[in-house]
Structure formats: structure tokens, C-alpha cells
Length: 126
Image (cartoon, rainbow, N blue to C red; front, side, top):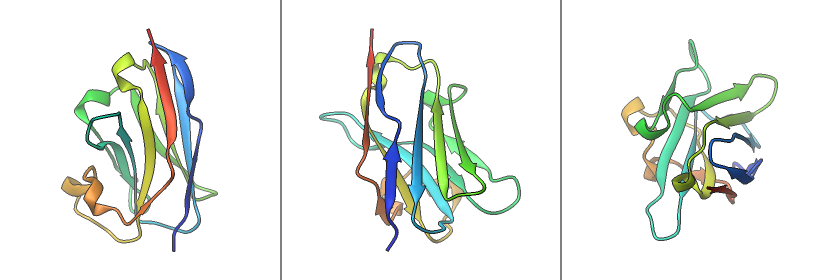
């Protein structure tokens, strides 16, 4: 059983930055960040393979160039650096993990993940 613990959420003004961390209890091949605002579906934000050459990452179009997902190589921690945040990005942010490999076209689909953290709230004010 994989356990995930997120941290780093909080309040920030529009245009500001936040850094989210997710510590996993074990190694997982695919790690991702999702977000869900009240009344909306959970959407994929960023995902990466934690093994393999280059550790490629994928992003939702809305966050490309502003968000960066990365891994702390010494620990099972995945980080989401969020810059130039917008007010419509206020949501609960969740870390997700899949022990097995999946096709890159599925990395931002929430149904593909086996394990989820409790979430961390991000609030962006005008």
C-alpha cells in the first residue's frame, strides 16, 4: 500500500508562486498532480515518469510554461513548482501515484492512478 503526503499549499496573490511537495512511502513509476475546484471535475495538471532516461514530464496546456514537476532524487518526493498563478487555479491539489508504467497519453487521466493523497488547498486571490 502506497501512502502519499502532500504539503505546501496555501494562499497567494495572483501572479505569485507556490511549491507543492508529495512524499511517497515507496517507489512509483508514474507520479502526477491533479486539482479539483468545487463543482468541477478533477483535472490533470502535471505528470512524470520517475524512472527512465530524462524523466520526461507532461503538462496540461493551461499550465505549460508556468508549472514544473520534478523529483527529489534522494527521496521519494515529487515537487510541483507553480509560478504566475491565476485566480481560477484555486483548488484542492492532489498527488497521485501508479506503481506501474502507463502510456504517456494516459498520464493526466485520474482514473489511471491507484493511490491518492489527501490533498492540499491552494487559494489564489486577485
